[in-house]
Length: 370
Image 1 (tube, rainbow, N blue to C red):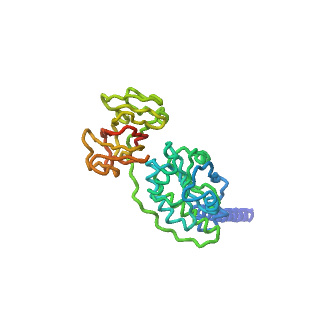
Image 2 (cartoon, one colour; image 1 turned 90 degrees about the vertical axis):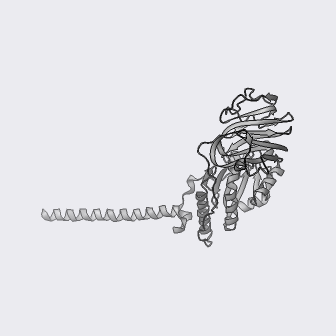
Image 3 (cartoon, one colour; image 1 turned 120 degrees about the vertical axis):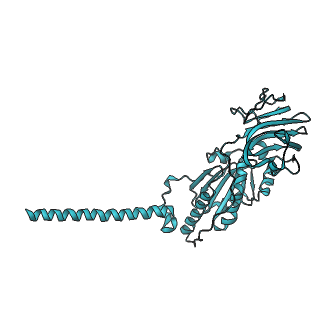
């Protein structure tokens, strides 16, 4: 009887040991797989990454103009490349702030298999003009391909709803990364490096050692600031941003009177203004706009030539608050449809801003704040 008990005990211990050894082996294997998914250089990444959960990047469709490329060149270039799709529009301040990083990544990684494609999906009608977009890409030093998605067909193919937005596809065309808005630049660049490494391993190419990340000072947003203010009656729907009692009058000239007081986060045109779908156009020989805002930076998107005088808290704009597009004193000259930086200060604060306009035909689309 004792002999049978001993045998049973020994047999039980053997089973426990066997299970333990198997568990350790499987744990080790799981760890290796997990690590190789995170860092593809540790084993054979192509076979270990399950791409069934990833969608393929959609085709680029409905393009009005190809800049820095041709349709044939772009189709050829995409094949086998890691592709960063940047959905942007040139008068969007949030898009503009991302461009130094994107152009730096293009300079740094284009020879290693990265292709950047700027998908220019316009917010305003003037952004559909090829000449305007060409001026913008020259201004911002963009040498990678830019496609003009004027009817938002590629925007819709990506099921996008935001400016800016970055998608990154691996060399097999699977979308592996998606980021909305500004920021996450280090994270994005690390994804670029990882996918380039995957590509090199898959193609049997020599892997370039990891390079230091692009180091550019990032714009720091204030947690509380005035939201974007739209002057077009269509874009402003549901936002309650026009403070004037006269309100919006679609496609009509409206005389706006001097307001008795200003409410925070609202704008007040003064003079005769034509209400358009995405803007207001000055129809009197002179006019002005007042707002009470909270931010450290103020930008305007305008069209047509005019001289603007900027006043802050009832006084001509002080040099301490001058935006980069203020050329002298408190004045700025607008011409091409574009975004202009008029206020730039170190700290966020509440101010009363007045813009006096001296020329009929001046058109304004939006205020943006930082």
